Length: 83
Image 1 (cartoon, rainbow, N blue to C red):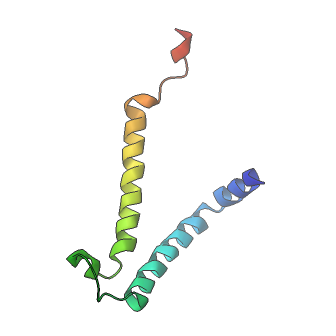
Image 2: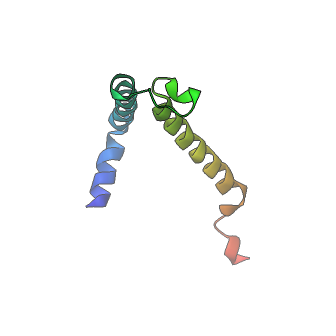
Image 3: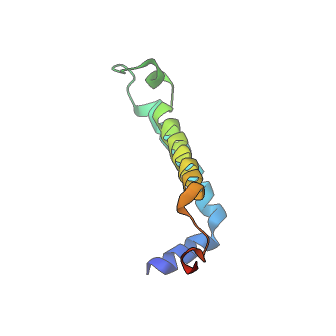
C-alpha cells in the first residue's frame, strides 16, 4: 500500500512540489488574514508569514546539515566491512 503511494507521488513529482508551494502560500495568507498580532512576544512575529517562512527555512537547513553530516562520516563505501 505505502509502496504504491510512494510510486504514485514519485511519478507526479512536479505536482507534489507545486502543492507544497501552494501549502506554504496558504499558510502565509492565513497568517496575514486571520492571526492576531496584538499579543506578540518579539518584533519578528509582526512580520506577515514569519512562522511559516521560519518553519520552511528551518526544514531546509535541517536537510542540508543532515546531508552534510551524512557525507562527513556516517555514509561509507559498500565494501567497508569486506576489508
